[in-house]
Image 1 (cartoon, rainbow, N blue to C red):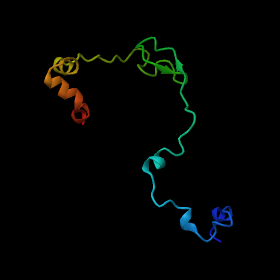
Image 2 (cartoon, helix red, strand yellow; image 1 turned 90 degrees about the vertical axis):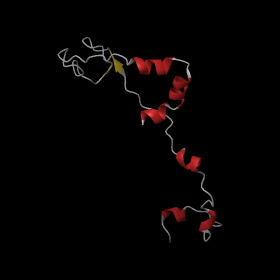
Image 3 (cartoon, helix red, strand yellow; image 1 turned 90 degrees about the horizontal axis):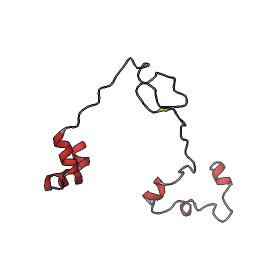
Length: 104
């Protein structure tokens, strides 16, 4: 015996193990097998009253900013990056088309 999987095979498949293994494996079929039918999403709670951070139900008050004692500075946008992102000139189009390269 080869194990419990062999016990479940039909009688006409016993002895020909090669027919059970596909000759060519489709990589997409391999990637997309066993995808869950449902997702689990954490429930949101009211935003922090000090820093307005989004919170999940299980997070305690003040976890994000220590009840307003920590204040994160909002960075000013870099003008050249804003121009590359919003303009329609050749440099900007090249930047947006190759954004993954530049991020790397």
